[in-house]
Length: 127
Image 1 (cartoon, rainbow, N blue to C red):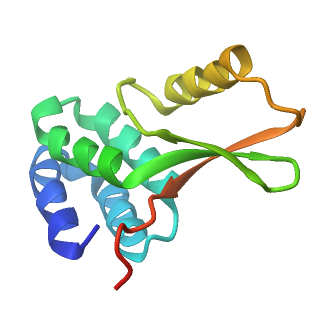
Image 2 (spheres, rainbow, N blue to C red):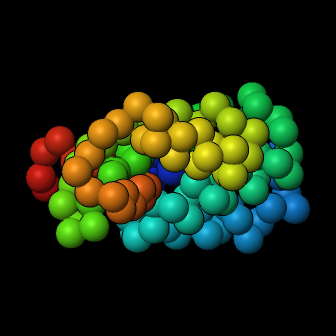
């Protein structure tokens, strides 16, 4: 995810959600620095709920779905599984509940503790 890709996704959102400037700036900073994938998702849902202009949000959603994943870890911090991010919910809570339900009902791991985290995907080619 580079600066031009991030800015291109944010420009239509900024026009549609002028009152969400803090979330837009937080998103941009976290995405540019690849510092907090969870913050990017939280900002997306805050912006989504502030504007509901899906046309303006489409590029931002596509950017997140392209560059983020949900990773499951066991209690020993061993990676168990990676899932793609599909932001097809209207709020963060319902999205997270759906992912947790998927793990409870459709997975069987030895560990009784599963930790789910948003993470930036690794680049295909190292710079």
